[in-house]
Length: 159
Image (cartoon, rainbow, N blue to C red; front, top):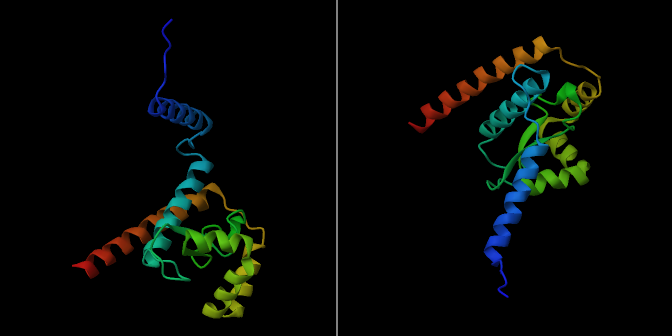
């Protein structure tokens, strides 16, 4: 009787394919024109602007590897989710560190911008403000223009 052996490489490929199929089935991409799509677009634009503004380097240590868009106050607080004074480029290490120990990041912010600016940001974050679809669309167009301006500025500096 002949046995069929699966090589390690084939088993790995099959398990990877299965995982990919499952992840694709689970992810529901936001439909164009929906509120969810506007939020996703704003998240992307904000991250691009912040990384470009901060020179694709962590504002705390200067590292340039695995840069994320870190928030002083959580993204779940809609009032400051896309505020550019609430978001900074952070390396993965500092971004995860500030989630578990937010006092370090809050102290850094207070040292850099002053405690009055931190208190104003705190009040805005917990104000409970929400945005209408029209306000989100306006923010998208404003951020697209700002990003284009940053790109032009960077190309002029590089030339």
